[in-house]
Length: 292
Ligand SMILES: Nc1ncnc2c1ncn2[C@@H]1O[C@H](COP(=O)(O)OP(=O)(O)OP(=O)(O)O)[C@@H](O)[C@H]1O
Image (cartoon, rainbow, N blue to C red; front, side, top):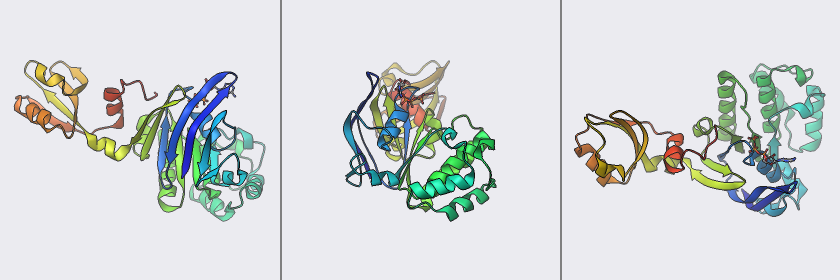
């Protein structure tokens, strides 16, 4: 388990992280969403111990990342570029990782390269953007670290490779003893993957959400009326969208009274729609708390 306590980071007099408190459980996939500059990368780099906090602490199974450097073997940060490795051949990178990470599994590493039909020799600078992103993940999962912190792992990739990468991450978490924290601008991308979502806004945690319970909390309905939605109902629900006489609304699942009133209000159309996390954000957080 990673526990982040009152993490503050000031860079060049700018308070980038303003007191972050979060807990990341083993076996979980946690998404960190936020707009450009919200502090996602700084948070991940600080958790991994690449940079020190101005204030606060991060512990892994009770041990401070900053006081016990060996803890860093189990918290690996994966940047959104492979630039740091571009001069090296794959063989050299394997040697380097073998030296840094005592549990690095080169056999597993090469088996993953084969699984994704990637080259096993040469320099990675000649890889495509998608192959570089996949390579970074293969390398990181081969360290056998307990936590991987992935900084926008699918940024700028096409839909096919994006899906392949997300599937790979989900598979690794399901089958091996590893947890991941993924930063992204896109709530919709993380929705299918993450079990927790942390929304970062201007260096603070705006919300920390448990996906399952959140999705069970609301119902999304499409209703249409001959004239308009009865005024008496409006205050009990959130209107996600309104086009003419058609409304897409969000109602708390436990608000049986409103659901009953809706059904009895003679709508021309009454239909339940699949709920997305984005709907909840738009309705509950003013649509401003996820990044696009
Ligand atoms: N080394 C640095 N020097 C100066 N400012 C920095 C540095 N690192 C981060 N910052 C500032 O801290 C703020 C947060 O940056 P950070 O990269 O953590 O945000 P982010 O949420 O990851 O953004 P993005 O989505 O654009 O990658 C920004 O205003 C950035 O300019």
